[in-house]
Length: 229
Length: 246
Image (cartoon, rainbow over all chains, first blue to last red; front, top):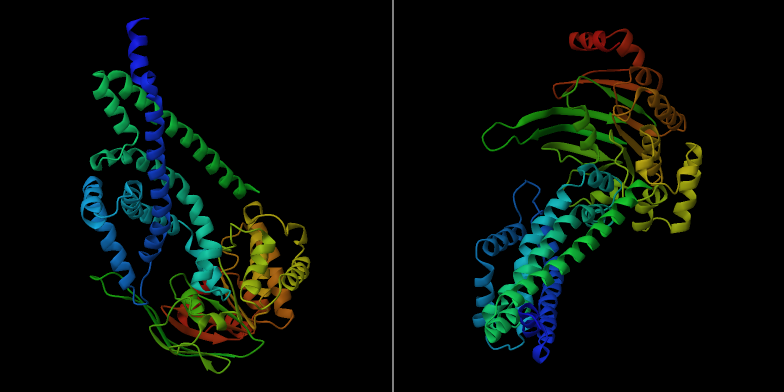
């Protein structure tokens, strides 16, 4: 057996190490998906809050609160937010994946709120006026007319946000959760051989994200087709 | 039917510039069945005046009464009033995410005025009148401008409004499509609908209007029957305007 094969075997096969990568990938994807769900729901609420103005054009209290939240989240490193969640806010909760998901979800919500706000603002104001002129309330027009159109604008940047989120979860190693990156790092330190586990892990991330990108492309095309009917 | 008293509208122009006075005190009475046509140079405030009538623009000062009820009073449910006032926009504003049938039935159904079947039946009858019944299942993007505007009129009519407001309904159309939209509006006028129309179509104003208003710089400068206003204009600004557009 050549040297390269030996290194490959040590990195991926010996003692069933490939299982560690799979478990790590599971943690990575689990946190990313849970955080994305939380981020999209909370982010949509924040985005709508940021669009709320009083009749005299001034910001509502909701708007001020949401804006402050986004400022704080964007103004501090996500690693630090994770550490604060882990060691302070949820110090006594030992479900690591849940704490990390909440931390990333709250972080992602800030970015999603801007995507939602931008997506709604990109819809022609005439659509809201037409809805209101028929006697529909603002909320009804939002729900039946504006949000379905805004969603189409939001898919590409939301996909982008999810991809960023997926990779950013690699920092959970800081709070000793074993995600894909940490699994690779552990194997590298056990085998005294970094090349195979790290490059192999990079390939895994790349393939997962490539598949995701293709799926998002399909979704985007589907959504656009409904315009052409 | 609609009574406007001392209507003023200022637009804020940022913190450091003075507000723009778009409407400088308008008083007017519109009776049921009238067809009021508003003409005037761009920037004269005629669209803003129209948009104040259903409170798409909030007046800065003044009162608007609809059927005796002051709609500018605080606490008035404007959504309820708007169901009785149709509006047609320059840019059609059909809901691009819905097909034509859903465009027409969304408001009456969601507001609980009609069942889905009743709304669809009314929509089909109205579509038939504008010769667009075959477009019920298509999306707005596949229609021409003239077709879109006829659908937009039908969408308002599905609410059985008591008055129809038209904000330059033919200004965004290719010339060959103006006629088909004006025809629909003329038929509506013949059926007795109360109409307020902001337009640059002087032929329409003369033919359909019961009254024509000339607005300039936020005020009604002259008001008369079409014959009186077009054939015997008094104000110099109106004479000047007519010499440019006729």
